[in-house]
Image 1 (cartoon, protein in one colour):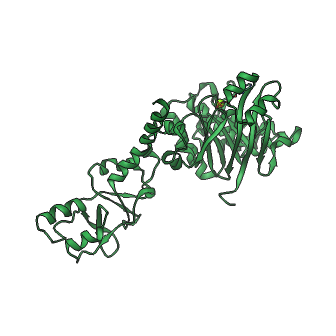
Image 2 (cartoon, rainbow, N blue to C red):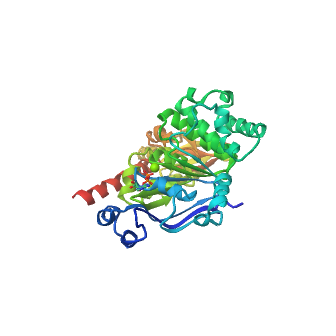
Image 3 (cartoon, helix red, strand yellow):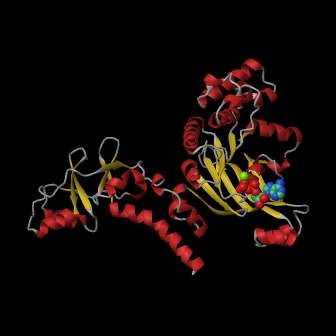
Length: 406
Ligand SMILES: Nc1ncnc2c1ncn2[C@@H]1O[C@H](COP(=O)(O)OP(=O)(O)O)[C@@H](O)[C@H]1O
Ligand SMILES: [Mg+2]
């Protein structure tokens, strides 16, 4: 099974709401007239405009956009809760639009499960019966469906509550039941529409963590919808940004942050703590390794334009940092001895660490050693570059605002 194999694909999908969706509204929309103008001229609402994206097997693909941008409409085409006006929706090679009757029911039951913002639980049934509901509808006998439900509840940490009434649970716990219910029938695809949006921030982060843990274990394909960019960037292997029914950008969280497609995306990005998303491995340099038997002058030559280099022991572990600033001061005082200028109080990090874990160290202004699991030097992080990278998106937003408002 390849990671890159698409399991869901939307191909040039349009969805127009109104009495005559394929008429003039579609002609206008497909020739590039905007959503508001189409509505003004025809009274039809553009839900999706030429949307294409594909979701690879085993990935968390997040569709993000403001309210009304077409997210729910898009997810609803995947299980054919909506017919499309134009285009194709493929799920594992099946053209979803062609499915009807029993085949459609079987497809929805076996391939997908949906988790909603409002948990849609039966308040008077207990947790286990809510969780096992889908299996009951499929005619699975009680013992078997309860076993599956307990397993699913264990995954969300709720097995102890199996026989509680759902109305006794907090919002966060009810959403866990919603997730357990989706997992219970063991579908390949989870469709999650603003599933965490109603939860308090702390609970919401816990649910995000748990979803990622479940994903790492079960390798489901997850199409996740949110209006929150932080959530999108945290969860998504890739993120698709919609505006007014149109795709604005599709990319990895890092691509969205560092190369926002336009000012609209950049404005969102401005509110995000990028440090949480960009990892050290993306921006580190190969290290300059200095020979400790050389003179200070020779080492400064070896550094070239770099702000520092390291002496290492026989196993490749860094023992001393030669910072360009220290070297310059020493040379100005006539020092040529390398050992007297080497620092042992340098900061270290790893390639998998996040930017924001290094802010404090970067604040010292000295190069940071990037180490592997065994403590060997694999890279060097330049503090100035951390600061520059953080400032880049802000500049982009500033530039855009000038363009628009001046
Ligand atoms: N059943 C419907 N009838 C008419 N307009 C609809 C319907 N469903 C959604 N829309 C419109 O389509 C657009 C996209 O809606 P939706 O997909 O629900 O957005 P989101 O989920 O991003 O908030 C909105 O302008 C909305 O008003
Ligand atoms: Mg919605």
